[in-house]
Length: 271
Image 1 (spheres, helix red, strand yellow):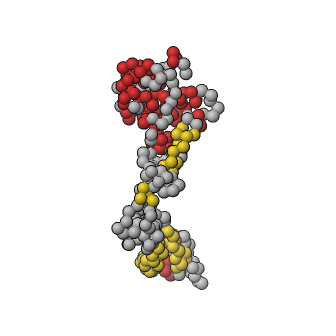
Image 2: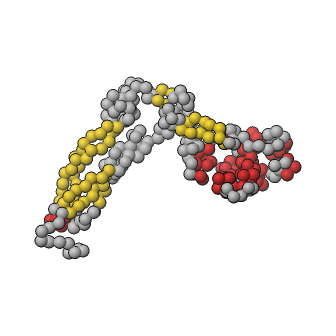
Image 3: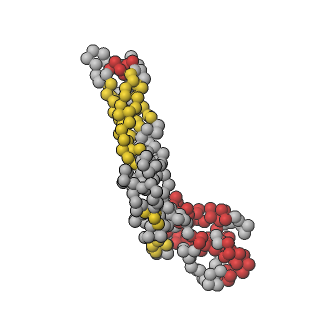
């Protein structure tokens, strides 16, 4: 865009000159979603509008540049207000927050500042099948079953690290959990393949769980089947599934009932 046609940055984003940082970011997110070229492949003007609102956001989201713009206008920022969008500036460091939920590509832009993904993950749900005699389904029954599932490693308390040792900073990403690549006018952060986004590498894995933080164990569980259950009934036991990685919440266990046919009796509805 030519300098003499450059619009006021506040006008571009549709905010007042007293707008807060949160209001500025919110306004930009809406415009970015509306004008992003990937969302408007048949609109040749969309990319220019996207660049315009991105340029405005890049200035107004930076406290120092915003102050200079408020005082001197376009002449006080950039190359005399000559345009261009610096997607490596501080305003655009958190691509996940700005774009991840808008375009469904959170992983493409990483996980925000630091990019670490050591947060706990929920464990998987499990399923066990129980075959009941016809009479057991009619009158109810209590059964003990064995469930094989992942549980937190007692030796390392779920950390995956040998007790007394600690993880080391990943050399590939220098602890950020992300490796940044330049793609077009975007600087894109991808999850580091060496550490899986954790920013750290386990050099002394726990011998009991081999660094996973979980081990497979068998547990006995008492299942109470109520009277009158039907074929395919599911009974949910919350938290009785696999424990999640990094000491994450356990999944659920679902007991699925199957009823053997009786030689004489059969069920009709509630009868």
